[in-house]
Length: 347
View: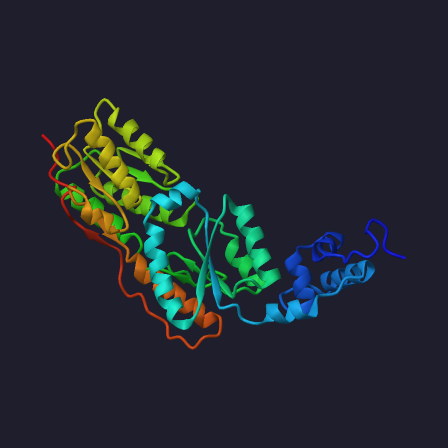
């Protein structure tokens, strides 16, 4: 007799087993594949639910999942319009693909709206065997993803400042505060004292780190930031933040942005108001993307070697997936690239 609640003749699904056992589909897969770090009690509960439902893994599918897909995932928590307008990820993907393509690997890009959606996606990756590994972007405060990927047994690397305490290895330039400190010193030498900072989301590690370095550099000269405004990196947010700063009774003489895309938006906003860059306002970006060299005036920014970091992350992830790949050490640090968008403080 078929189990109550299930139609006769219909094969039960892994989702029904997971629901009956009170676990994720990834845990069900781990229980049958003898992988992961499930407790014995959880494993027995899963196997019992599968027996009661009459479910077993599809052997051909399981064999397929155990083989390499030669595909890696890049999951980005950004709105579609923000991703399309930010060349940072184009540079990052160029660096990653430069290492993957010659070895016959492909990259799958996924956009997610938030942390829960991203975690569910990783569980699906692990349960369905769709990718061999993942590149994690935007290291966050209290980041749960490294521990999740380690628990799922899915190889991963995290883009961000080197951190040996993380559950998965992180890849990035060392001395992450160096670039922002050079920016502050550069503007102070030019005579600026009213300096604003347009930052990214407050929950990102690099936002916290760079903001602290910026404030510390000014504090050493007895100064405080004119203002610190957090954004979601969107064009509208950059424009709105710039307008709010320029509307002040005594506006800042220099604005530092968390990336080049926002700096370009800020520069355009100031110019539409009739301000001259850098005569009336100095503007600084972060990333050193090609678009900064095409502007007039050319954008002062911080080079964090996005392509090189992407390539290093890809090589490390390939090695974690079992490929014979030598690591690519990142021995540089973010550095100021002074161009034409910064000048002496206006009189």
